[in-house]
Amino acid sequence: MAFDSLSGFRKRDSKTIRSRSALPGEIILQNGSEFLLTRTKSDTLIKLPESAYFKEEYTACLELIFGIRESKTLRLKECGISSLHDALSDNILKDQAAELLSHLENGFDAVKKGMSCRLSPSSRLFFLLSAYFKPEDIIFFDLETKGLHYETSIIQAGIGFFHNKKFSVNQFTILSDSAEPEMLEYLIPFFKDKKAVITFNGRTFDIPFLSARCAYYGIAPEFNPAELFNIDLYHFSKRAFKGFQESFRLKDVESGILKTPRADDIDGSMAPEYYDRFISSGDPKWLIPIIEHNKTDIISLLILFNRIYDEWIK
Image (cartoon, rainbow, N blue to C red; front, side, top):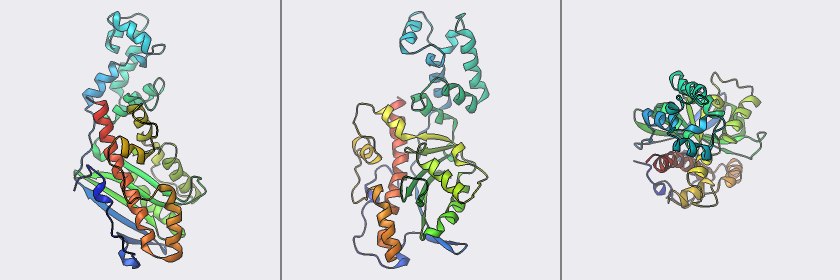
């Protein structure tokens, strides 16, 4: 099954589900607390830029040099300087150009650091940094929480990752408030050995929220997810599709850009209310919409990444 559209994940039985066994997934018991693990797989692949393409675009970006912006770039091109290689022949620009070109020899961290001094994190060239990764290096991440403040708890964490050319979505849903620390300790190892995380506004919300909740429980992970390169599709969407529409909420991006509007889906802001009803009633019918909503979020991240790729790599 491929995630080329979202509609196939939104048709659900409308009958009231009262049996706990109807929960979609495996109940994990740790230290007396329970959380639900829900798995989905797909053959859909991610579109990643070629390394040679990134290097070509990087060396063509004269704005990496201090003092050069769009207008000066145009003037330099009129003088025959169209790349960092060309800039090596200019007495004023040659030292900076040589340093920037050396970053390509020194790897991802050096390139990213040099770019960070000159470019916005939402610039196209930062998106193209994904050329440094293999599909297996990347994890997709999205949270459902009880509120926007870090003092509130996580209801559900969803991740997506590639293994053996399959895209897997794993969701971890706490079945009681006491299960949050156990769920976090189970979740964090999935970030190990990853090099990049794909989120939607996750640089501002999801990753800091995750870090804050781990700190609250005194969980000191061997590897900190905040150290991963964050490919935040919220900001890249606003840059790639500027002028297409006013709102860049994920649902609006799905409707306007991906042309896959959601049906029978709750709003993320409703997740706390649905979760509270599940806790008070024990009825899985209140939990399943949260799981479906989060799964759609993760799937949308993959589809949206590929759509931005198509827009920016032609």
